Amino acid sequence: MGGTVVIKWGGGLITYKDQLCTVNLDVIDALAKACSQTGKQLVIVHGAGSFGHLKAKQFRLAEGRIDELSQDEAIYDVRSDMLTLNKFVMDSLAKHGISAKSYPPHEWAKGTGPKFKGDLPVFDGVTVVFGDVVDDEKQGFGILSGDDLILRYATELPEVERAVFAIGGVDGILRVPPARATAEDLI
Image (cartoon, rainbow, N blue to C red; front, side, top):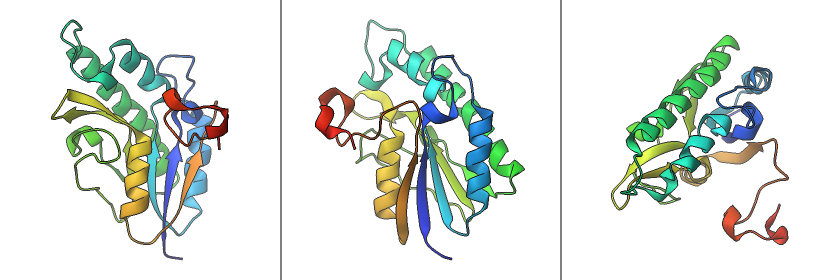
């Protein structure tokens, strides 16, 4: 049953986005259980939901270094929050008998967007990565989106059969970034 499947666990699905740093354990456990029932090689990319978006937006981390803002503590906090969320994901995968390894992007990736730099880490079991605050040569740092991670994993790994999006709290997936999207861009 070879082949690889890249799965996005959307942040709006695995957390309660209206409550700061609140995980939806029932959903995470259901996703982990489903993953335990396949013989496929898996790459899981999870979103941030209530663990990253609010503080990242408040301190404009996606824009990089802004002199008039004190952003260093926010970078630390968002990374720390993402590691906390990732621990819930990893614990659930282990509970369901899945051998998995997590690779926090701030430890191996540089830059943002689909052409970020860094060799994609892959584990013999289940590979887990997530959206993160990463170093960036041009702007000091920025947000490496889970969507950009999915794109590279789905197009650069051999034998990828499909990319699956498990999402919640949204109407669907957009063909373009939200700032440019119109109703016709909703898939």
